[in-house]
Length: 113
Image (cartoon, rainbow, N blue to C red; front, top):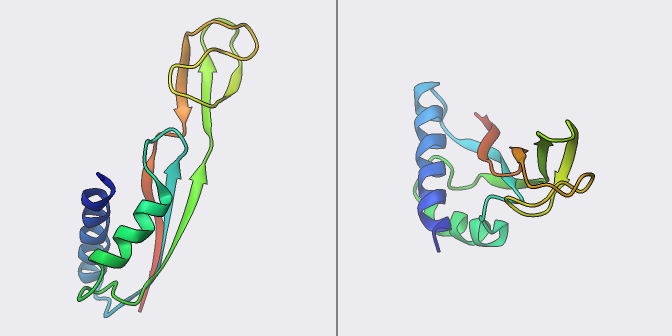
């Protein structure tokens, strides 16, 4: 379960950012998780509960937004929805599709006091 190390890194970034900005506590965090990122949002939530205790984010609410996969087909020049990495273009059937969204794990924003 690599979600534990991912969430430990997220908490570290959140708490360091809060400290650098003089915050006393983190109230909420919003994460974007790509559908093609191979990260399980439920596992992230489980890990979040395990690693946030004793930090500035101890009582913070976590919201996860799932970002759909998307790519640019180099053959037909179309933006297409992707359901899998290296999938075929749904318009022309070729596999030269450059992924443009869906593999991210990023902190969208956070609220501190």
